[in-house]
Image 1 (cartoon, rainbow, N blue to C red):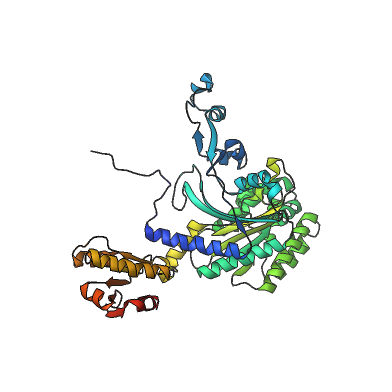
Image 2 (image 1 turned 120 degrees about the vertical axis):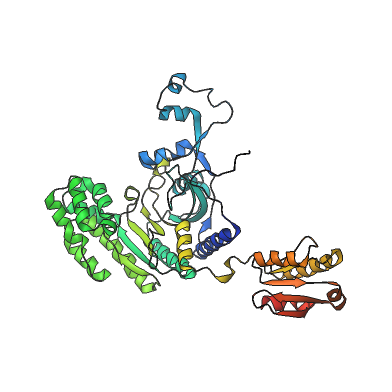
Length: 455
């Protein structure tokens, strides 16, 4: 018996209904990107491994999908390495020169360096493409998934952050998802690490405090002690993490606490500018300051942004921040950038949970014409051509099968209208139109069909 076909773990097929819903998300995001002046680029699915390796840390290197060289890939391989029980990185580099991209940011940095002569800076780009990670698949974590990134590079202005917050707000307003946008700044985190006398432990501190929502302050404190912080440092940190009040009150309090830290005060100043400008412009979203917010810390140098859905328990649905040296690894230092990434898969889950898709998100065909014979089919195709020219999706059932079978097909596809052009309709220049929702049937003059269906 032939083996049943399957797909690799951590990948998915998407049905027509799912694709219509995903396209609704992508189209909404793309429209907003265009409206804010971002230009679309695409980069190849595979990059040279030399571009990808060493950019995501040791863990990330392990999660890169590597592609065997074409032809006789063993030809140039060191035979001694082939006999090793644990294949080493050296062997991989001899067998594979290319890998699938792990994110859109590193390829973007490579793109900026390669094309710098033809780019206008600041350069506002967006990219909506799949990425691949050789991760252990689990709920909500896939080996192939889409990223929707927008970045502005070549400008230090905090106006860019303000614009990105407006853009996030507009995307979720259109998708009708209520959100909270959380803000922090890497410089504030550096100031806190300085204040508690452990600047070299900034990564340990932030990895721990990033979990405060999940595990609570006591468990965070225990983890900080485990990571080698002194009890005194942990006690100094406690009041900082429990600052409350309005954003302005919290920034003022932070200003007092971090008075002795130059970098900390700089971070507060940046946060103050971004929050005040954003509040003047107004947001639908809830804007919040969160000193425990760290995200992929080693990456960010200024603002840190994270978006949570208010009506569904799920991880962040958008995130991003400011990085000062995007292109430095490719020999073009000093290009500052700020960017965000919309989590399309999580947004999809939120829309499904709250059932927020518009009614027409999956209505592909608006009207299907039944096939009553060859001549009638040609007459139907003429009417269909006119409907399509007016932006109404229409199709003809291809076979002159029994009426019951054709109706069952229309029903199964949840097509809103069924049209019939038989002998008598041809003679009279009319169409019999059935509204599949109400069951109502009417005779419509062929030249009035467009407006009848459009209504």
